[in-house]
Length: 184
Image 1 (tube, rainbow, N blue to C red):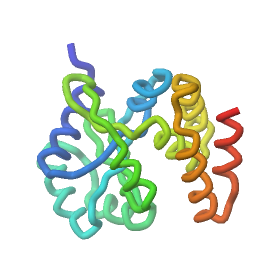
Image 2: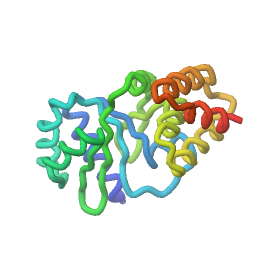
Image 3: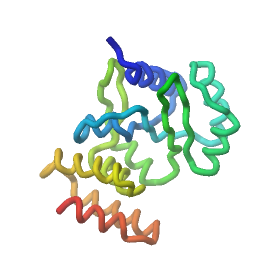
């Protein structure tokens, strides 16, 4: 029997594929595949979409059965770079890709099968960096489980290059410092 989260995953992936949009999963589903499984009640995605096309995408999301305020979703996308689609008691948190790093991560990503659909995941290295950037405790724990699971197989030079670039861009060495701590 399919869980509600599996049905939601199939629904959002079907919509994104039908619209020809690039994305990758970055939340609890991804950490379950790349690191250590944990309970999750949502799907977190980074979506590659031109903001001028967002309104058209949202109209199609409504037709697909997602519930949300289009006006609020557009406002949140413009203000925070993220918005939420709801389906029953679950939701999809969508971050709009906006950086060179995210584009690089997309190129390095891979397809995996989950709940009967193919989804896109970032590489373990990119996932680690994507989790370090926001710096929330839960994200850092997710990054740590991926570091531990892929110990000895991570591309350290790649991680260091991007950690330095992201720290320079943010004018804050926290990303670099956290990566060094996670890597031991």
